Image (cartoon, rainbow over all chains, first blue to last red):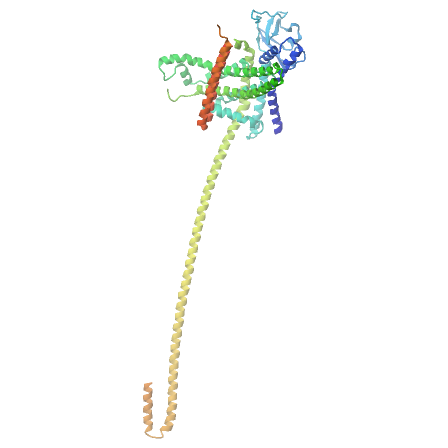
Length: 361
Length: 165
Length: 64
């Protein structure tokens, strides 16, 4: 039993190490298939393809050669009325145009545009599409992966919770997870929020910690998922932190923002806009930090894998392989660190909101 | 800005929805029981540590009690031994003195008896001497008294001799 | 002559790197002096580094 579990984790680890090798391999095959593209162009394509969200879940293979293995995801669009169809329809129809309720849609550079029946895209001088864009509520690859992360988390923590009702001694999975829960409680929540109030914020802190961590780790697998490297995802997380902070703000918190006690009146007027700005800068930095770290990590790793194919010499290939290996391990660390920092700073903000100052300074 | 171009409203919507649902579901079905169990366990560990400490103190108390009882017993034993020794000494002394007095008594008795015997013997001797002297006297008288005059002198001589005795 | 934005990005990275380096170095010194306070120092270090990193990223995106 123990060995089986260890094997499972070793498998996950191995997957994460080979995370981007699959993408790199694709680009190599591309090169053989259509020689008109240079390797560098292909690498750029793979990079963009990997970092951007997608409307279907591509597993492996080459789309242009027709041997790609992918499964379609539902497309949900809103342009005054609701449209629903499967992403596979884009490939079935001519011009890659899908007709739904009298409107025509075309998938272009992983974005959906509204077109005429011929699927023509009109560009401006910078080669940006000018077509109208419907609001895209599709279950994209990222949304699908988020659902997977959610289900995984529910299954994991529910099974742990069930085990605790039978026996208070941690066994199996809970032996691995419990120290992390204790870490969030004793190293993040308690010192930053305070003994009196920390319990209220534990569910959010735990959820956000494990969500970011697991999403980061899944981003390291060869599935090419990139959840936390999407600005919309980190914006959502930061927004929740922002609202929880504001709604739990006590009198002292607001007093420190709008009418700082203990400083001259003129200074209070100066401090107020700074503090109000700080209110929004804090969650903004949370959002940017997580997004940029994960995106940068993915970009660097794919670029280095690309370099394996750019250089012909075996020595260089080996060196870049080693570098990729090393960076992948760093990324595993970063995956944890970013989850930790996001949770820690959230706790810090909650702590400042519920803090009660006895002394006036 | 590239940042805003990347922003997908749909993704944001789904992410927010999914995360909030996940948060609420996990809070009810996972975090509450897990944190409860962890706290309960910590409480029980604390309790058992406290009770262990209490047991240790109890043990110490018992041990000191034992020591006290042992010391008491030892003292009692010593006292008993001392008493016994005293009794023994007394008994010996008593016996000694009794034996002494007894012996004195016996000696005294013996002395008295000896005295009595001596007196009896002296008396007897006196009687015998008297008898013998009478016999002697008879013999002498038988021989001497044949000559008158000499008898009286002899008696007189004899009596003088007795007085000397 | 216009300075390309990528030079600005480089400057940002240099500045942020120096800042985080100093924080890390000072934290190491502090831990060496007071090993018993290492937990608190680490927390403070991570927070400070995260703030600098946030500013750095914000500037990088502005350049971008």
